[in-house]
Length: 213
Image 1 (cartoon, rainbow, N blue to C red):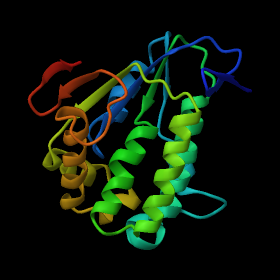
Image 2 (cartoon, one colour):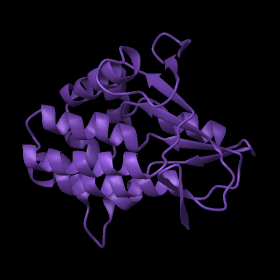
Image 3 (tube, rainbow, N blue to C red):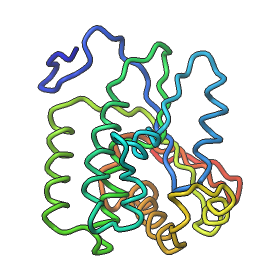
């Protein structure tokens, strides 16, 4: 149940939990990271609801989006926005909630990439943007720390090919480069969109860890 607090809707009756979002490109190592922390008793891991994106009453909007982003981008991203909001608002028992990506990256990275690449009509982008702004304004979506798995597009591309997920077979390296550049602008340069929390950067290629306040 949701109740109003400081002008926003928040989950009623649940103690405030720390929220950590693991961000990064496709095949940057998020699953491996989350699997490690899932073995810790005081952390509850929430992965991206990919299985839902692959099956909405028998339809696969994820595969459809990769095949024809101009036609299916709005369909998938509307559902992504809904399911990621559900992840943010879900009840967890552990004192720490660790999420794979977030509502913020769904908008700032993937919706933005569709629009900038010319594969999402301006009206679709406007609709998704207004939905996102309404959510941020009216619902509490707290994030305490962002862990950015900084990985080169080439490394991600090689991993992507090795894991052979059906929907990802059509992804070119140029797509991964675009996603990488948007993440760098958002979390490293911090020149594109507001960053909702401090950023801990783990450079996978160089094995370097550093903090951005």
